[in-house]
Length: 337
Image 1 (cartoon, one colour):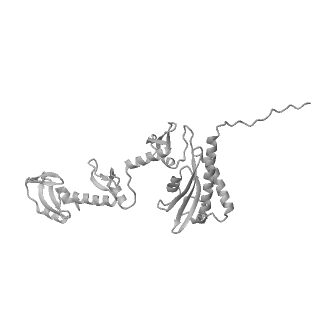
Image 2: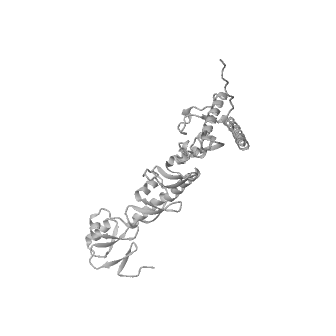
Image 3: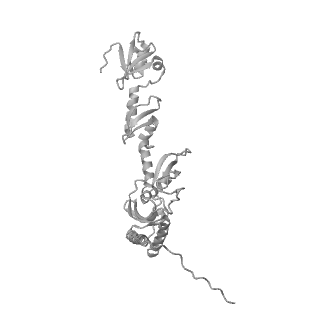
């Protein structure tokens, strides 16, 4: 609804009562010198209505502020600057936080509303930090836990920001576990004892493009090859990479034993297959077990052979119902004297 009351001025959405009284020449000159036009006295004898020459909007300023400040701030220009900074940071300014002058509410790209400090948003816009939606972050942490058969319960009861309280879905045990360990699977359930050594694992082969046109192949084992590929191995999250093969193995201990056997066989059959550490140290967070790209097919053939052996072993265990008996040792006969 348009403002029609001639006795008031609408300033920042608030009708301000126009007060009688002279507009002294020193006020007019001070306003002009500082980028404003003096319009009227408002609210009481201590406040003035000024029109900003930059944006054309009205602002209310105390006489004292006008006369003593080097450059009185225009709230409209300030909000416009905040909005532009938010846009540069990939956010949208929604409103000021009424409880503090340092914060505002923004709309994140995910559609959730977040509360951030103005300076932090400026740092995002400069590329120094990245914003994080608390709702989306909590959902990611819950999904990480669910992928390992755990349930995210709460923040760490002891206040450590790197830890969370989880519950094991299989046995019901609650435990404090570092989030980094939950992401990689490097922990043991204190209730049922499930760990990397007893839990199912994988042998894998991965290809990394450490430089344009230059690739290497990684052979290894992991409880979670995808986490190994995306988080643990590359130094740069944008490094081109591909999971070539993943072979399920019934335990981490067996996977480790098979991996060592494969490396021994490959090095014996292909002495020049291993890539020197210096060639990939700037791209990958490992120091060994990296092979030249021309040995990708021998590695994949070896993994396919292991996969067939694991399938046969699993079928043999499942189809043989006979309990295993301890070896029979006949009683020792006494020596005759």
